[in-house]
Amino acid sequence: MPRLLRIAAAAIVCSVAAAASGCINRDTAVATPAALLHREAVPLGSAADVTLRFHVPSNAAFHGPHRVLMRLLFDDGHVMASYDHDPPVPTEQWEPGKAITYTQRILLPEVPYVGEAPLVVGLASSSGKRLLLTGKDVGDRMYEVATVKLHAERTLLVHEEGWHRREGPPVETGFRWTRARATMTFRNPRRDCVLHLRLSGQPDVFPTPPHVSILIGDRIVQRVPVTSSETDYEVALNAAAFGAGDDLVLTFAVDRTFVPVLVGRGVDRRELGFRVHHVFLETR
Image (cartoon, rainbow, N blue to C red; front, top):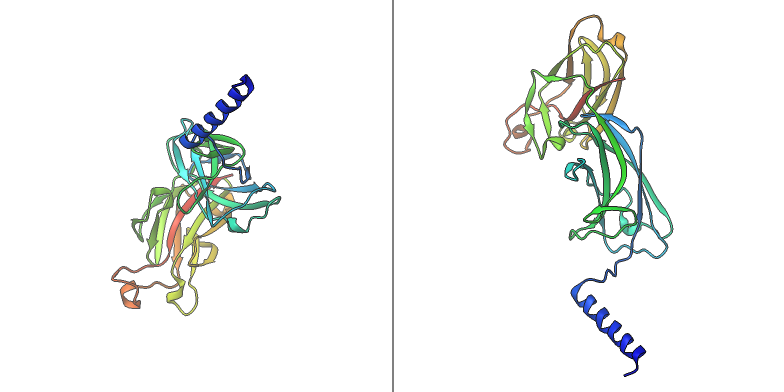
């Protein structure tokens, strides 16, 4: 057999063997992810907004829904927090040659860690298969899109009266039900602050949605409705709102409560107001 033919035949044999062993990657990258942090330095326990952008190449196609995997990592690559979610525009509606852009709020965990933390994203089908993307692959088809700088400046809020035990999944996504009034105490920061909240409840058990009054001492600083979905609020507080005292009380007062067993919502006999998923007082 002529030498060139032998080389071609050998190449065909190697290609077939590689394909059979799964060594050839026939996947096509379906998107290029990017992220913009609305602020790079964030205190542990606070909240941050991340604008995600997925540019879809002209030759990409999605078959069925896919979930966005978003993780914050320690510097050794282990997961610090997960923010997996369904994109607001389902992936089967992503058009080739166009970009999908939206903003996602993440809650930073309270962990003993300061410094830079990589933010990585991926796309996974309902079966768990991860798609090939274009970018810096940190392993397992997760792609680094930003770096969050974490620091430990904070004002400690201590739960006092009116709270039920913590429920739900892991700490960063758990919640606590309140009674009619729930209080927390903290030291006067004597600086302008922002109170970060994530709240939800079961307003459908009432003819009209209940409202929550947020008080510092005896003064109402904000009043918000109770919604069925988790809703984020930011309450700006200037230093004058805290007064001259050293120890202060933060109160959540809801205008209506319910007992699930009395309204046909299970066997729970507790008096419930609303859920608090996250509360954090950040100095500015």
